[in-house]
Image (tube, rainbow, N blue to C red; front, top):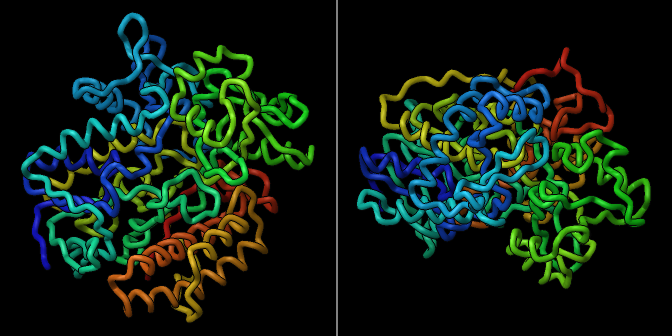
Length: 514
């Protein structure tokens, strides 16, 4: 079946929903979401949304913190857009009924997280993403010009020589359909499922990045993956994010002897940026040979449980008390700074195709995202993409240099499982990387890529094939980018090139299928 619409939005997280709200004022909007509309990385965002709304804050200060966390690679105009337009969109959420926590005077309560110089993080207890998603979904779901297709797995983009024409998807019954639209927005979120250990939900398999690459769009900065330092690490229990807001409210990182240790590695201690804390945890675990813990036992237990009810409940399911027990933690893949390369209006290198949110790369985050900037990014750049989608299509002005060297080639091999890909990426392109393991991973992923491309042709409606194809494609691009960048910066750490090298590597690099 062929479906028509003025605008197509693939994904139902914060960027996609905010875009749909603006687009619906100008035409018919079709939203494809491969699961429940509320099942996205947005809903898993615990800590909050950062915006310069406090009396002691300013866009300039927010920009300074963002750039410092980005380790010398932020695209300054993208940062400027985020910090200057962000407060307006946060106030919009408040007007729409977002139930952020309030101070006694009725103003939004502001939390502090790592690498922020002031309190600027608005929050709804420890389920901020879920609350923002609720508000946006409430507006989208009642709009007569928005049609939502649930359990709709996007399989490929439609294109001709002029650009993107829409997408092909498979429904819950396994039937293939096409959506034709003048402009298409990819807002499918991240790709944490490429790694064995991740905070991301099962839907975060990098489908949008993979489909854009296969259609010929440029992707940039995929070597920069953020590993969240504090993820619940209890055998037999699911990996669960323990928000940075815990440390912002006073939680401490301790080694097996009960000793604080982060100042041994970083002057900012427990509130250093995520990449630094993650590597500090790994180094301390190696030094001591023991586990690492998060402790809130020195704080008021009633406050801990009131402030963090979702996390308290998750920890309790693992048999622990957040307020009194030592909580075992270790890093896990959390956020991909790279993605589909876009300009400041969400335009990609493929005419008619736009991207926003974690799937996109504006260069905003540089080499390492500042905590709680992701929800703000979705709001700001989702709205900006929607505005651009309603205008005549114009070329994107992009920021990254084209990659040098051979493009991805189709080499035959046996079809891997998702576990195969996730294990390979975790061990070879995880928190610590080096040439030998990366070279082996790139070679293996190249062989797998040829096989999954053939499998997609043979079974275009097979959801599992699409999942594995996405993991292989994005995994290959991550590993190849990590092998190419011979330095350490932000979320990318090479044991064999442990220093930052601004002379050779203060640049962004884009991959494209040729």
